[in-house]
Image (cartoon, rainbow over all chains, first blue to last red; front, side, top):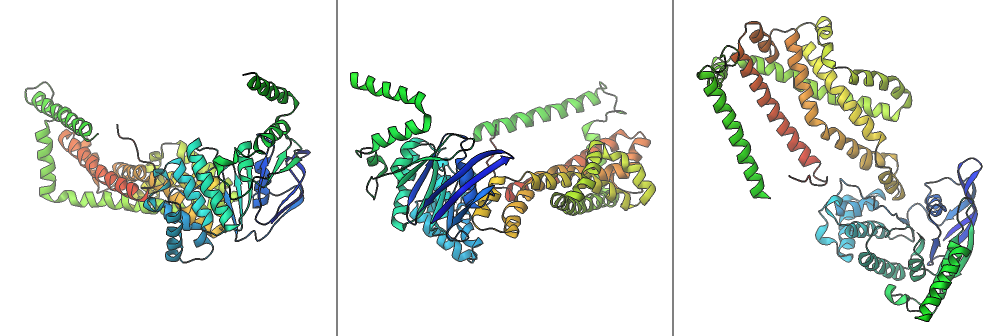
Length: 259
Length: 257
């Protein structure tokens, strides 16, 4: 479980990026945090990961040291390590012997259809392959919690959908708790149990929270056909971009009806 | 791709051979004064004589010894100082200005000073070779640590890595890449230091022979020695390149034109 209580963060004194942000992610829940660029979404995740010290408030993460996985926008694979060594890196850091860690890494490479490229270096991989390796690196640790910061933003639509589907299957199967930072509203709805909306910064706060009622297990492509999807999408859009844009989306709907 | 590479090699070979043939003919028919520019066959004769007499080995070994000790010592000292400065801000404040100053000047001007300090023996050549390499390696290590990819550090930290694991998994490989990437330049610097040191004052070495050839107006010997030095440096360059290609095989492949 992750509990964020009255979190405030400031990079310059007197100019908080975040102010009194509070929410929680219960065990086994998939929660998304959406917000405009620069609203401080990544700062929240960095604070939870322990990479950023809060100015005020606190972050409580169950079992932070050994069972939390992180998926960032950048794959950040060690360029001098092979795919297999990158996947086994976390296991070796946790104290596994190299041969056992590599064997476990091979199992995950097999599961994610990466076994054939186990001896390659990251520079020899495509963007999608690198992302899969990063996912394998995280899943190999059998995390209870995964923190994700727009992990698929750099991928093209087809690869992105395929990888997201694979990941959601693992998450549902293993009952992993996930906090996803994204600016993609459709992705947030398709994957989450709850979507939190962050107000524009500075002094950003959670302005609304919406439960997602789409049943699990989910098929990413099918979720868009759920009856609750369009309404929630419109609500999130309006909350995110404000009144001015709200007019445009209404007009767009009217145009569609006229046609 | 292979075909275009082969054609390029043939083209280079033909150009080079044509130049040598033109040089030979021009020297023989008197277009060029052989006193200043002896024919290639004369130069080859001198090289053969140098090896047949056996005298050259003494000079070659002296230069090689100074250059190799310069590289090894320069790498060791440069790595230690670079690491220490990157991790200790006070030491960086002291060392960085000195290194910047040494980097800004043509360091071979220190050669006469080293002869005064260490004499005309091997020590002054090693010292010059070493100072050339130290400054290069210092900046490679110092910048390598300071400019290490922060995302990799965070990745290892989030996987539970402590500072020793960070050192092993991120800092050392990152710095090694910088050093290996500069190895070829270091080889060139070490040879420059050894030869210039010998040129300024010594009793043996290729630099000493060059000095002798110059003072006796022996153009054939001078060109022979220049060619010898070029060949040996290129052999070492190719060795350094092989090491670089093996150790840095994880880098993106260079595009061949």
